[in-house]
Length: 268
Image 1 (tube, rainbow, N blue to C red):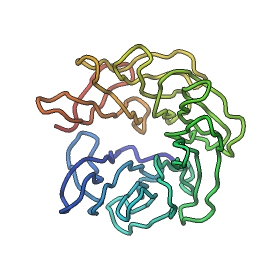
Image 2: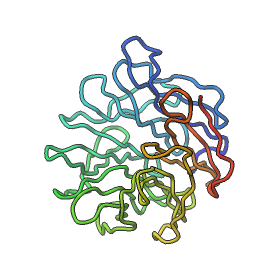
Image 3: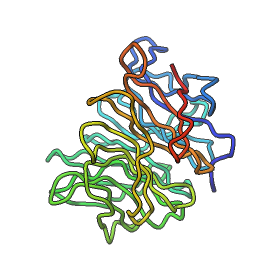
Image 4: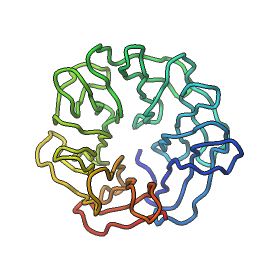
């Protein structure tokens, strides 16, 4: 199942809508209207991921100390903890059938490995176990057969793909590249990185790693970021955050067509 055509955008921001809170989760309409806080919890809450049917959100919360995986209804109700470990969990993403969530877990050797968990918190399974490479930012393919992720360290950093059971991991594109996301039809991969220097931009390439092209062009110099792309349900646009576009330093959320036209700020 795919998300509804009339999409909503979930994002984290420093909101202070709850006394003592830090980052919180908000939702808004695809035109930037209707911004609404929904997490309403103390402690940093971040990395929201909408379920395929749009009814639930997976997220990270540090309300009891370290970062753990939670899910809640799309309106913020029925917040339920899925993981309970001494390590920090990050980067949750739903499987296409909405039954499992993949995430990264920080390990003692300062690397990360990838795990999956059922949406009821059962069946936590480790997919990667590499001492030399840190795996982060996983994303399921639309057919559920493959998983994308970023690998750091070892012989080759870059974007990798593997089977959904963790086998046959292979490099697709080398470089300082992050947050890979499959397009809804599975034909393309969006990601961010700095392959050409010190400026982070959003890129798109074919699913096999060919045809890489730059989508965004930040007007600032080194140290500015266009990061963390996500696809619109129709596969025609990308939403992402961009730093230092306003007089006050910080981040705002932008929308752009995949051909690089029509860049629009959704938050201010």
